[in-house]
Image (cartoon, rainbow, N blue to C red; front, side, top):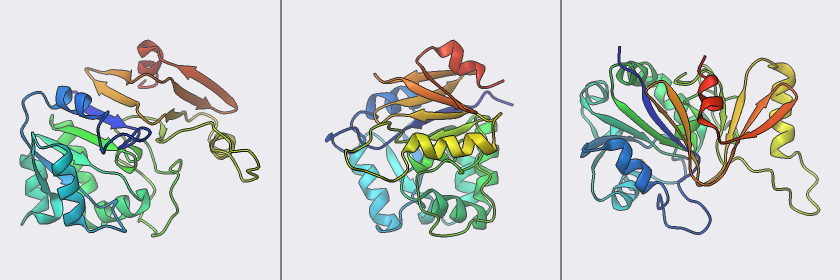
Length: 234
């Protein structure tokens, strides 16, 4: 079994930059010579999967990108590709589409066999234990909330601790705290926009200029240290 290689981007954009702009250097280094990839657009709900695939192709012209829905045999396509890209959107729809096709299991096996995985937003959310810490509305009900389990903790992409003046709803920290009360031994890692987690060689690294935030029970810790992040893998 190969060591999993997974790039978990918080978002497709940071601030007002172009689509995938800050991610391009990380994606290029991660793929390192891979030129043909499979893209999973299932998180897209308000845009067609063909359009979504073309959008990613335009952002990454150095790659030849094929939408998984465009392949005659998605299972075979996953088994043959060297890398899988999974885009953002609605996490519930993404996981539901993967599960009803049995592709969640195929992707898990492919990554175990050495295929690279790059996700952003919803595509990163499904890399953890479950999708219980997604920011999305449950617009569909998947068979299970269980995710791909590349890392043994929860993820919260687009993490922010900003609270607008006059806002009276629950903050992101409060929502994650609710998870912590009911799941006190399960860490949640919040990754800010423009940041990413890289799993490679049994190490977990933080990419980008911002800190990550680790929630565990009722504690909250800001961290950039690779050693601390890697400890979450055990």
